[in-house]
Length: 109
Image (tube, rainbow, N blue to C red):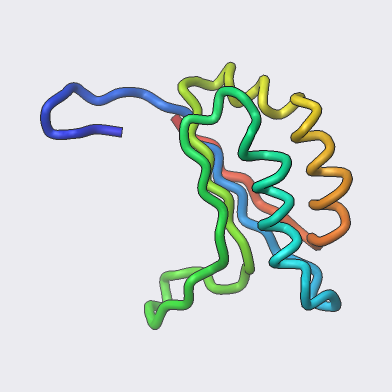
């Protein structure tokens, strides 16, 4: 991230795109609630944002998914620690595996 008054700062971004189970109309809400419960409190997360796909008339915008997660960490090690944190593991088992059919992850620094 960069602001006009400082030099660029390096962060590690972790973006997850989720396709929820279409047979369960509550999957989107349950996934977002699960993120708030299990993922948001994990130490090392600088910024947490999880929400529903927003439609767009622009054909370049992917509108096939239902939920996205955008996390920013101070560095890759913090993200690596997040991946093995018990709350993340619990989210995967109790929320992701129950409510999602597919996910794609984009990591960049």
